[in-house]
Length: 567
Image (tube, rainbow, N blue to C red; front, side, top):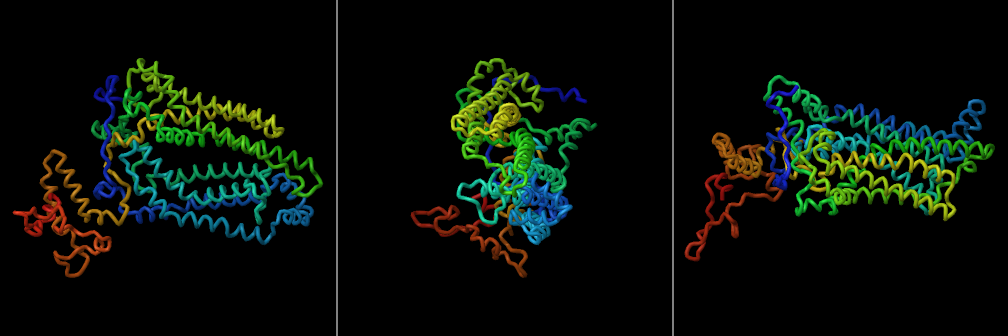
């Protein structure tokens, strides 16, 4: 329900360029605006909930180990297992043909998943470090902030399987010959089937772990869905308004950008093209990768079955299908490169083609509902649609070009033609749809840069955790106190009591009160170790008294830390 005083504002057009806000360094955020006491506290919270991600990772490593062992030819291994039920010696021969031994497989099964999972758990301090510097006020929505926290933690936990998989694929595809102790001789149908299945398993594990390590579970914040419910249904209008401001902030980056401003050409800058490629690549991982990997398991699996039954009666290495030729691999990379370049430059080209839509815009503000935005801002809708069409068209042209080149070179095998058809019928539409989804949420980043340059979401926290020490250590930092004093003075309200508290504490800011018998002349040992001392008016100091009659009056020491700051 919407109250009468919650009606939408009238449409706005011809807005002035947004004003960039000054950046406050994270080291000056006062302790009252820090969410968690320290990085160590985050690590302790992660250790209490890491049991579920650890179970998922152990299962993932067992799946990857199984796929690696059977990846040379899954069909051959399945047939060998069936025959081995009646003739165990045949299974031992199949193991030996690839260099595996029973003892080696048992050792890997017992220690590899557990050891790799322990490595991921040991990286938890890096996860704490990765999320400690996040500023919730820099995110347009509470859901975006919580999603960023979960993504960074998941990326740290999933780093070992991702790195190992990438190294394995690089070693198999490198052109300098077979690597010793590597049981995949080439990217034939069997290894490609296992690789696609392994990447699918990694994506599923990523989603599962990311769901578990959510920001409410790790940081103790209110879930974004609960805040949204409060913003919509709470009976108290004040609480409803406060929750609505936390849920979603108004984006100051209006579209289209004003003509003649640097933002109007922002999509042509390296920063703008980088953001376009980043957003599109993330969308492709959600739209394109699952579909193509699933098709890869089916296509390469069928090719492996055909190859095995064609070479029935031969050993494993003899029945392996021919590896992908170098022209086919280069053709696949060419299609990806063309799609990437098109995604990076598509917003700028689409904006130039949509100039006629500027006059039809009735509201330049950003709305959470895309249907509403597209209705009031035809320029944005046209740019988003054209960006997806340009990317899909460029990818289709690249696929056609690769098909012609492979046919001319005589390298167009049946498997290559299968992927050419699937790429044109499945991959290209998904590339376009993914680019459209990315630009709906990221077009403002392309033209303006990050949203926090122009807005601050109204939430009580400005930092997840201090970079050094705890909130109590941050409270004793004189620079933080001085910055807070400046903020209070610039607020324009009566903050006499707060300023008095800061002044009273500031007289002993440089005292290491943990030392026995501390005196007002003692300096904090931590600051001494860091080479930071208060400036009491040395030569060349800004606190040195001005010379009189050409002679310096020496050092005039302020009578308080407050006076020291004001000077």
